[in-house]
Length: 265
Image (cartoon, rainbow, N blue to C red; front, side):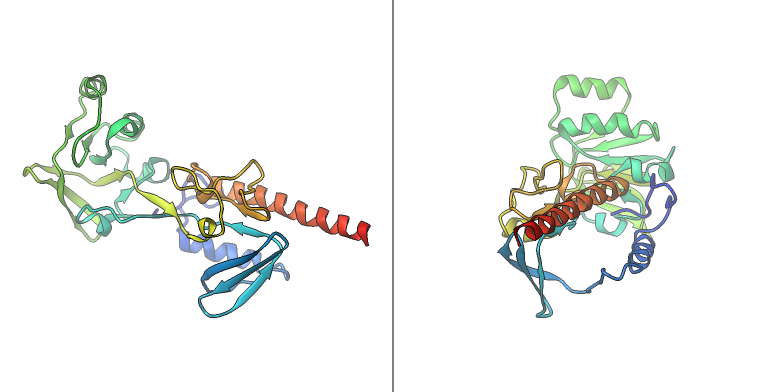
């Protein structure tokens, strides 16, 4: 969850809701496109003849499928995090680090990924504290590296996060430690935004993403996937780029199939 899009030329600082509104407005100019406010609940059929059933009892047919379902967060058992998520607690410094530059931050992370994240955060602020919310899962060498950079780290579990109107004020640990801060970065637990890719047999990676080839094809013939659910590059501009490329590849396949069917007839 983000407050606004960053690093998306011509759309820097725009809210996700406004971005979607503009996108729908522009796409609506094409007469072959229609929007349906409904939820797909099941898919049947095979390549060339898929059937999508919705929560409102409708059925749609299609030759191909393109999943652009994104990723969603599993709830983290940290009291107070939900109240600040997307307002002063974020997951990506490239998306929200600029607005929190030079502010005192808390990083909720552990293990090897922490050793990637800590130097990254240091590019925005030198005032940050690490809360591992339990055992740090670091090696002695990694702990020494953090100490050399004078980065405070606490292993005590987080009791709760205090905030006011969505802005974090402090993180309180079980051992009584209080860490004042103005922002939080943490590692989310992500799953695909829909169970349908798995339900129809698409291969899912160990980290929960839909496995695709260079053209967005999944392991199921006729089924494609693009965006965050098919890439570890969780950036709006990267998802848009991948979506445009995969859509072109899918369209090319449809055109070639029509061409070949005309030859046979």
